[in-house]
Image 1 (cartoon, rainbow over the protein chains, first blue to last red):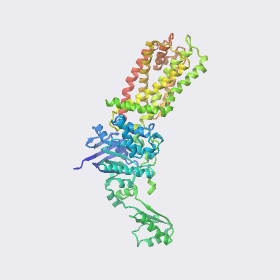
Image 2 (cartoon, chains in turn blue, brown):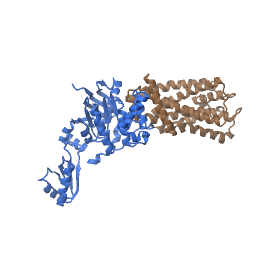
Image 3 (cartoon, chains in turn yellow, green):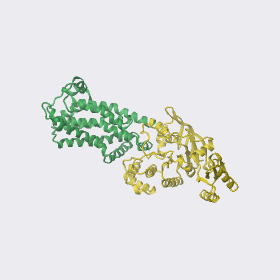
Image 4 (cartoon, chains in turn blue, brown):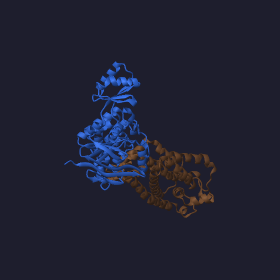
Length: 347
Length: 260
């Protein structure tokens, strides 16, 4: 029988009159990867903070490894490692010093801590900046150290809150491959993200969350079947060109015309190869077009397909301010780059 | 024991930041040094305290003032520190949660001590000559430690209450600075007008000033109220009261942010 690593039932959290999470029921099986997918302000961060015992739920239950997050919080803390969106590192210590401190707080003596820190430095490619103060590191570098710190004791359950938001593509790949390796080692992973492709790349199951509640769930394959895959979008220069294009292409491809936007969408399972073929044909025909581009489905596409309406993105500040009001953290810490800015990328 | 070990580790973490954020220590040292220079060399000629060399009168006052400013320093550092993401990590780790705040207090306390040493050294270098018997030295040391400990806890509590480190600085300047001036630090209380004198005779900083001065400068008598007649005892009492109020409040506040 598969053990259930994370189980929540009716989980609810309010900040004043703002309900961040409402009646959320989730399950993550041992050794599997579940992704919470949703826009900013959906309640992802609040949910994972409750699971890491940093916030107390107002209603409902949550159990991690069988232990209740409220009554057995200490046990839960031993099982869970949360790596949040903002690096939880001491900015006045170097990368390595941070790792040593965390290792010592987790029970290692000085020598063991140093050895472990060096191992993590190698594993996460931190060596080039290991002796630099965290406050002088770039976002991607901080995130890598942050991940390493969360993995001092290979946790039973790893929770990653938007692990690649704001990272450059190369750092993102490093993080993804590290995550994949961890999963291979048998770690249970709950990760939150705004990126469809991240959920697709890493998760066994995806739970779509919007305004604090679950709106859909399924495997990435099921998701894509409903949402559609990559497509090539051709935007004609004017309505005449649009008609010409439609005539040109409809026999050879499965075209989905959108006359109002003068756009023709063609599914592109072979991605770039399809793009090249279609572009060549369009080019040869001489029809004037504004754009020929390869587009990947976005979060909005997913929401539209699965719920019939786009995701309700809160301004990033709303959830932040609500959470900070209760914890009296300084709101809007510096370094919160990239939230929402990636949305425009593949739209 | 877990709590002790975790506290030591977290204190070490606070202390390692000291040389890397030198501005923090500057607050606790530059201010008293500037005041010393101002009052000694600029105002000093106009101030005359009967029966004593102004230098010997001033320095204990500055030291006590420095101690009182410890609230601001501890408050600002705490306000900055407790809102760092790393504290979240500590809170979600299986370490003694109490140690997070005790580590903060001990770290701040050590910084205060360091600042105090610098100020005292500066005073000695400028020619201050405290008359201390061995017994008095021990008493002074104990009182200062107790006082700094109490004021550090008060600072940590305020640091958790204020909205930002700037707010803490603001509070410091509006409340603590005038109080330190009133406390007989620079000029005798006896010479003040009725209202300031009444406040000064009872506020804790005056007890601080009188206590330090009483132990280091023989022949000084600054009476006028029970606490000024028995300043060392008053200072000890104030410290204990401060601790009795601030420690539980700070712990309660800390637990509340944990549970949120």
